[in-house]
Image (cartoon, helix red, strand yellow):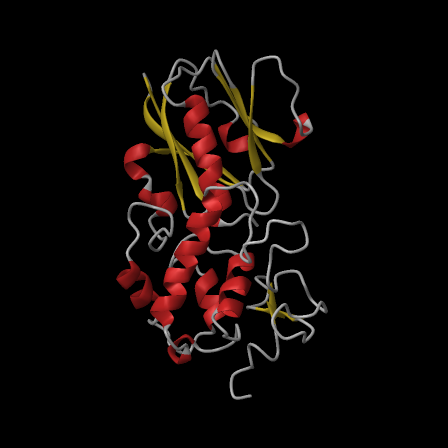
Length: 266
């Protein structure tokens, strides 16, 4: 699933490409919006909120927000009129056409139109956005510590605590902090430092197309532990381990170094 920095870059792409332009044609290829038509409306802006995208549109029918979420396989691509698409047309869920650009949302996990004044119905449950103007470290810490017994890896992934962290950043943050993902939040030393690191990681990667937490942009050198199970730890050489965590139906792979990140009580 895309991380918050990936969604932030997608919002920036859509904002640069569409904002200030009139929609000449809209095509919503999801059943609930099959009859929706926003042609003639003005695209005001696109912003990200955690892992959610909000494209604000104004026209004769009112002020609307196109709320989309990439989920596991989604992506937005922008083309010039007449230019071929780089993904199959049957994967397209939204097509927004202006005189200058064609924005296509492929394999989107969520597509809905909500009144702009009612955006909170879509994203009001989210915690402070690590890349947003509403970032509030104290509020994020308060939310994380509501349940001090909760495993820190699970708490970091809960978008109600702080918005933008996915599985990759969770694994990398726990490693650079020397914390096993199953450590209770209340037992994490220097929790504010971990939260600050999370913002630093996302901010840095939001400015480049290639994600890296090691500082090395080479293909196989970008991550400390994520998707490196059975590979040697970059610090101590111990094989990286992986296991599934979380409740049934919401399992996630957790990666860690047994030596650098000893299990709680170990």
